Length: 426
Image (cartoon, rainbow, N blue to C red; front, side, top):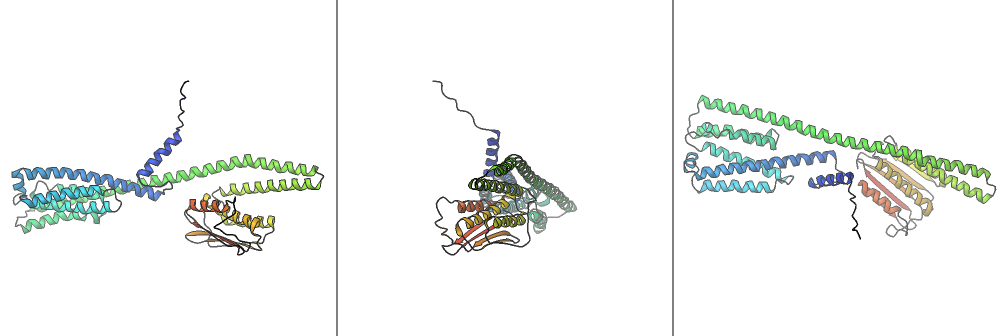
């Protein structure tokens, strides 16, 4: 027999999902990442990349430092002689490696990088000030200070964070005076020249950094808006299709039952047809409510109140609805969860609890939206719900999906109290 060749079920959609999953895992993000979290992740990744560049720059400095220590004329010129100089060299090597190992940590990576960069500036000042002849502002290595200003501005683009590199220039001048070196007018000019170059570097890099960050945040927010727009358009499309398809079928069913009802003669048959007509009318009403909740302009409080009135008329139960607080617009999935939980609570009360009164309270506060449904019926044991009833499980799953809190308090003979608390921005 010929071997059966397996079909490749990979699709462009699966490739996109795999690519998105890989990026989220690399950045330690979840599926429901917000625009702020995405921007913070991007800033952290940018810092880690620049910190790695700093490590490679240090490797070059360490290589040059090893050459200075190895060539006698150079080590004599810079005054780097004896075990103390080698100890300083190995200390720089150790803290450079330690910094590289903690770069990826969100907090420790930044602090360790900043502290070790300050140590680099101290070592630079020592190397520049050490030579008795040609040291300080006469040193050929003075331009190194501009490099450290650039590194500070790239890694920590804040004015106060760049102060250590700027302080290196007056410290070098002060060391020249303490070492009885003559400070000429040319060296003073060099001081102001380097200060001016530092200001230019800081301004240019800070400006470019702010523009880059603002542009990235704008793109992330735009992508979030586009995703929301796509969801709204898809909901509208589904609502139209359901309305034109299923809604039309239910309407036809109601018309047909009305026609058959007019032809029926027997009492039991008319009762059955009437019940079928009532179920179809209830189904199309439920369909209309679901389609309304998919719209962005759906008013939740009014929709819940109307449903309570309709339910009261249909079941003849004494249901009282109250609301408090300033209403706010919730996401469509949050509105649907609130409605379904209210629907489940009222249905259970009508079918099983036999209550004298049911109270429904909807409350808006600045942080959360609360729904409370309470009845004085038979009650039950929440730890041992009846077999085959999945209403409680469905409500808990809806609450978990939205990051909400669901509390069910009941006992046999003591009624039931269901409390659902939803964050304002789930």
